[in-house]
Length: 225
Image 1 (cartoon, rainbow, N blue to C red):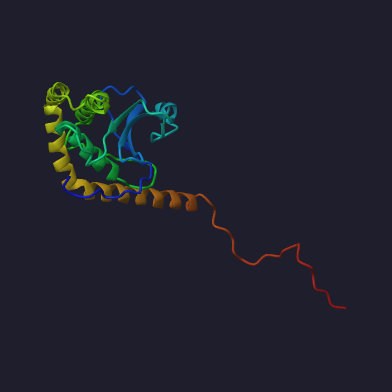
Image 2: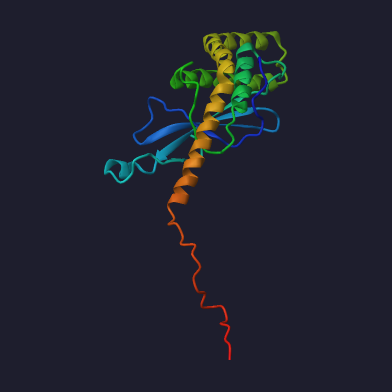
């Protein structure tokens, strides 16, 4: 992959990744984490709008998204640089490594800034195809006959059937790397602005105290005889 991950300190960020099949008052979220052995797990969570009822009847203006604790789908990408991977699996590993480096760091739900490069549904389609390929090849790769030429040839044949998915993701990755720093900077700017507005709302929600001196009845009184 052309450039190093932007940040390896994950904040368990979620990213909005709405899909065509999302149910009403729900949305798909993307979350990525890494395993100790370098694999990357790409989680697709469902989030529900807790303010949906209020928005229908005018008591709430904006959605309040609550992610479900368990993901609907988890895709596993192999570690970058692992030996013996087929070319499509190498692409999956590189995309996984890239996604693991796209970090805003606030642990909230952030905008996904890569929609202009590929539709969310298409991106998920390609990722699922290569993740299924990797899952299918792993048992054969770990078997004691993995080096048999017939096994090797069949694995290669299966891998080549996903070349269109790998090509699309490689092209997406090249373009995503070019804009990643700007995307993350924009997301962090939105987080900063959101926090500023929250603090201002909190400050403005309290009345201005009267700072004039007033008698404290708990203090002892001084008297003169």
